[in-house]
Structure formats: structure tokens, C-alpha cells
Image 1 (cartoon, rainbow, N blue to C red):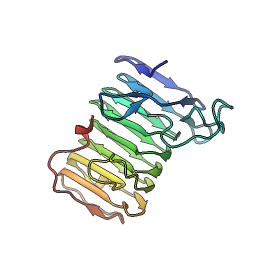
Image 2: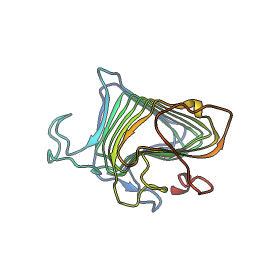
Image 3: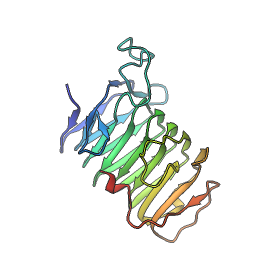
Length: 231
């Protein structure tokens, strides 16, 4: 047993329709985050609208047959750890995770047209060189997105989260939290959220750009990104 490791220089591709079931996970460097898949190389998990890829709990008997109790719960499995590698997840369902995608990398993160459901703590929390997070749905408890990237796109996401009250989230449970050394407001648009955390918390150094979104902006008195310091 143990987590699946994708070593540096290795690319693993999951075909459309692939179902990945997990339980628990290995703690990453005493951070409290649990990983079931650790990506030092590259993971490509690109489903289709008609044939998505599913990451879920071993207890989720609604897909892939009866493999567990039939009573899945948020946090049943840890998540996918970016450990210096790159991940591309499109048209996928990530259900019942602690933190579905997390970690620090010089690589890239792409999440497009995914459903992050029954989250226990955070949908995505990462520090990467490039982050493209578009057209996703987030529901559960805690924070939808925490991301630190010099090249960042955050567009047309929908979040419906409730406060987790578990200490995860470096700057409270605002549903979208972004930090960038070259923050371009033109690449942050169309995001929506509900509840008390329906804000976009921003930090870093802005470039010439315009913000045109109904989601209110929030700022913090903090200095450097607290996101990358979490790993």
C-alpha cells in the first residue's frame, strides 16, 4: 500500500472514464495535508464532458461498483500533491477529498471544467509557476481556491463553500485567495461565490490591468504569500 508516486521525468495519463478510488493518505512533511498521489513528474487526467475522470472515496459505491461502505464522507481521502511536478486535470470529478490538489512546484497547474465536491478543507491550494483555473465548480467546507503563481488565470469558477472552522486557510476562509508577483486583474474574471466568504482576496504586485467582476475584492496586511509557506 501507500501513495502513488509519479517520479520526475515520468508522465502518467489517465484515459477518459478512469475511476480512481482512495482512502486516507500519507501525510506530507508534517503539514497536515494527506497525499494519495504525489506528482514529481507530470499527471494528465483529461476526461470529456460525456466521459469524465473520477477521483473519489473507496466508500463511494455510486461509481465503479461496490468497493466500500457505501457511506462516503468529506475527507475520506487526502488529495493529489504537486511535489515539483505538473498536473493537468480537465473534465474530472474530485469528490470527498481533504484537499483535492495541493503543493508547491516550479511546474504548471491546470484545472479546467472540473467538479470539486464534498471538500473537507480546500479545493485547490498551490504555489506554481503557472496556474490556469477555469470553469470549475467547488462545494463543501473551507476554501475553494488558494493559489500563488506569477502567471495566473482564474476565470468563470463557481464556489459554494461553508466555513470549515478547522484552521486550514492561512488568511481565513475567503473562498478565492490569490497571490502573484505579476497580478493581472484582466485574467481574473467571471468568478462567483455564495456565503460569508464570497470574496476574492488578492495580494502581491499588480501589473497594469483592469478588474471587472461582481465579486468584491479583499486585501490583507500580510507581506509575502502565506500559501507557499504552507508546504
